[in-house]
Length: 415
Image (cartoon, rainbow, N blue to C red; front, side):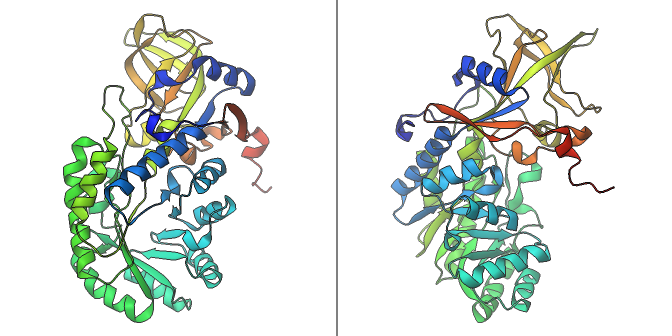
């Protein structure tokens, strides 16, 4: 059985994994291999929800599906009582397939393709509790053209972005949300054409202690706008709550964070919604990869592994740090190495000159904190089959995504 969330550590470090079990899984299922701990997923969600429920009575904590859309993760969270927030029609369908009630799903449309809107309108016809969040006037017009007159939330742009990288600081990116001062006018238009239910904003991703002041300033603006737009059913301040990827970074004090967010929103006669994603899944997963090449050069010791940017693209895409540990021989003296994969690009590097227990060919390394935007951004660059994913739960393990074959890589092509 899973631990009580109150007894589980606030963040799982790479050394907290059962390394002998990871080695056994790698021997059984080959590498590279994603491992996802569903007990940890559940613990993280319940810890987050408990903190905000303690800070405010009227709270609803959704899970942001885009962080990890695997069926096993979604069904675990649905069973834990989490409503699901989705950013695309495919995510909505995945949530429903995992057992989510469509009437409790929230679809946050960002420049939605026509097919996504068609799907959403059709779904809402039979599920009147389904909510669509729109961040552009054009999206509202397109919904009306399709005969939609149901539940609408307005995504606003508070003009303040936070997070670990400029590419995720959505709160100040013009791509996301109605410009702040235009919101009251848009809300009045929505009231005339649809069922207006709430205000939504997402400020950024990967928010840690140093980002909280800016994050709370943005939340204050969201609360101010919510009061200008009352009555409304909910005010949704999004997610973005981070986990420490570096080993020496402290985790968020989630109880203190909850109190600060609740204070920042202020007195609004509406349910407070939140949408954690990364916080729930990031430290619940790791990648196990095998060393295949050691190359000594005058400038660096290069360690080649069978994982690549096709397995985990975050370091190449965002310059993200992921902890790496030699689980075959953690007792060896650390040695500065550069770890990279088999792709023919200099971007295919997980770290440069980082001290790791000196790897040898055949060793297994773990790459930590891969649960958020890990498998969901995996790809087939260089025609590499995507890896298997194994889930841990209640002391057992099972394959939840089989390893792709070479035939899978070309399966959709026509000759």
